[in-house]
Length: 505
Ligand code: XMP
Image 1: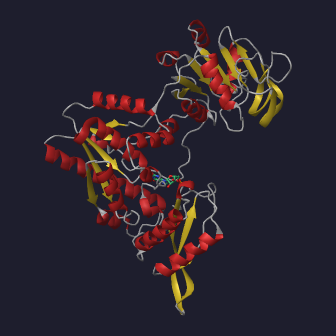
Image 2 (image 1 turned 180 degrees about the horizontal axis):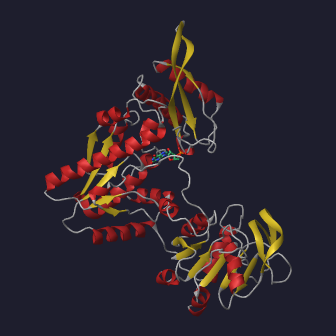
Image 3 (image 1 turned 90 degrees about the vertical axis):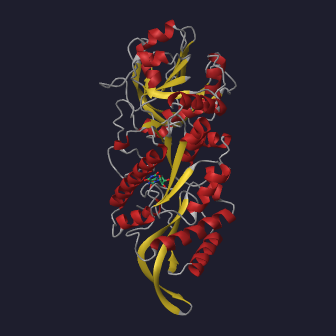
């Protein structure tokens, strides 16, 4: 395990991911963690991230007292990156000064071949990505890009090896971990799966029952499949059809759950319950809150019903929380990076009702999304399911702008969305697109269809960061207007995020 002490760099998570991609497990922890937290991980290597601070500023964050001495006396290798380097240089008695000029962006550095951390397979000069104001100054020849004290095992890089703009950065990290520090690569998703199954089996008693809310998304499905592998049919999943799903979505996902994954799933149809609560509601935040609350009522009812059937209360609740969600809820020290402004009340289907008093099982909470997909493949979750585009918890309610119960809006949108997505699949571009979907606009436009004047709805297919061919778009427009009654205009959304958000509400 390689812990990354996070001092608030935008790139900290990237370092973690790069190291994992070398089959070495890595975790981000707060840069100011107590020494006991670091020592309890028993690491061979510790990395200090960059950060937005200057070591000269008051209250700039630092590692715990005694860290340097502990590392030295235990033979631990320490690599400081950017701000991490400055901290290390300062603590080791060197000088960090405000650079004559600040360096942001692409730079070329000269490689001193005797330098272990840079001297691997990289060339004599390499292009690197800098982003700093301070610099380590006591070493000669001005700008220092890399430092090392082989004897005491302290290393530092002024630039960011983890970003793709430093083309030889991965090679530098690789040679640092394997050649300089002698770390063993051996972290594999198969082992993560076995380890998680053990953890779940230790947690859940032999008579305990567990519930899980399945959405149409990948995370809850992978989490449920893993827990099912561990405890079998003491897992009880619920899939909620709230009337806000896409065309034939319920049938399609239920088939995957049952036929391909053999998951024990109860499907509850609560369309009326949700749509009656949403009737006349046009405020996006209010919609989201109502939906979140209704989900909780449904889970509550499911838990009670289960208790009646089993004669026993379920004890645990499975959630597909991912590592980025965990990191986001613990902002790094001194960055002021907190959830200050609510743009949208995102809710994951499966928010835990307080009065249910269930204990949480979060088997994916140390994994990034691409690692969850890898785990899903090992668990034989079908590829077509893993590659599905994201779909928001509040469903089509945030894609029908305004009142979702008005004018057959949901049905119209389902048809438009299905045509658009099917054409994307037929064109073979679905897997190259992060997310594509249609929205229903609450406006009416004048058109001519079959020689008659129409006053109908408009829809907008949109797509996150993908540029369609004009011919493809013509086909989309023609198929939608010819096949979906009540739509006479299609407008294309090409705005990026920001200024927009992906979902329109
Ligand atoms: P926005 O619209 O905020 O969306 O740019 C970013 C990503 O999150 C999805 N999304 C949600 N997912 N619950 C979810 O589970 C929600 O309430 C929610 N709202 C948006 C959205 O589809 C996009 O992929």
